[in-house]
Length: 416
Ligand code: UTP
Picture 1 (cartoon, rainbow, N blue to C red):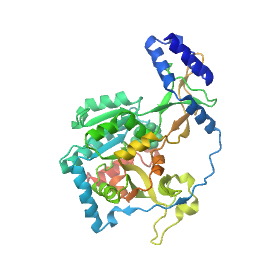
Picture 2 (tube, rainbow, N blue to C red):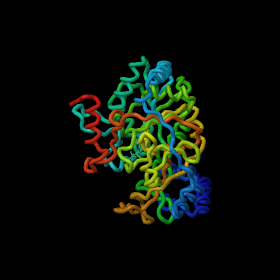
Picture 3 (cartoon, rainbow, N blue to C red):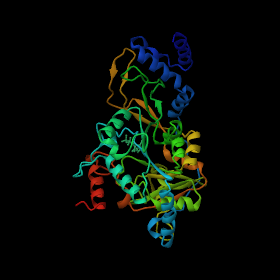
Picture 4 (cartoon, rainbow, N blue to C red):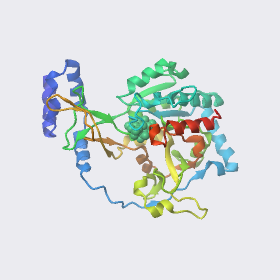
């Protein structure tokens, strides 16, 4: 251990992070080991460059942005059945799995516990996890299969998530047979001086690395390998907070298979030209998502010959990937985006500081940044009222909140 400690000290000195051992002597042996392990795993070069980037002006947009082709699910005419049949066959053959990303902090919602455990206020009082489980089981039944379900958690919420599922008998799923949990990656949080923060427990303050961490964590945790063993070829990846998410969609799958693409995404048309959502586009000829803040007013309002918005297909985190594509994406690091957040930490004297304004940088990768690595993908426009009822904010926000999601859910399932 002493030798290890010396090695770690040398690393910290090199990167100006010696303070991380300030409270080392006060930790018990178990936590001392945990701290050393954490330090050994940190990519300090990456942390340094992420910090340098926080003070750089965002790069001026040099990219060539052009519209992307999409299909409208309800204007496919004869092709609807054709794609559906292809997808149905693949689903019946057990080629589809579902992944739910549930590692987020759900700060805006402000629920005490993993977001998936949140009750949106239906008469049944079912949690988001149960609503998702219901839909997945129901769909599986239609095709005579059990769709394997993979849940991504974070270190922060993994225990609470798994306990919640245990309490509910995994909603009929079988742990490690048809439902699998895995923990996403993390990155240290740093202060405005580039120093890594120490958390309340004396360990490094780390935060989930964003939904873009999904590819690498699926691979690193052996999930893609498991999928292959199970004969899975296609994976629907969605968020935990859309209570109308349709994870099993033979039409989407049929399109992907028929067109020979490895990624197929669903979109809903923007509520209006200036809705603050990311939309599908091509960036330098490759599929991508452009943030509303990046798009000019002129582009936002531009329409085609049918009066449809040229940049009107919102990304709703409903995406289908081939297992191959996930593995390729998992092997290539994505860029990190920075957010300035409030983070409780331990100061140099061992006091716990609970800031009332943002004090630390958090780094997150975005799932859609990987889209640019494929030459082509399919975008399928679906109906908002059928597939998109997000729970992002508390009711006080008035949009994308439990009240609006409940209303959409009830309307779709005719519960009123
Ligand atoms: P959001 O970007 O809406 O984040 O995540 P969030 O954590 O749920 O909420 P806020 O921003 O803190 O209020 C969209 C989906 O991606 C998952 C979330 O759990 C949600 O299903 N996600 C996000 C992760 O799994 N890991 C992350 O690191 C971030």
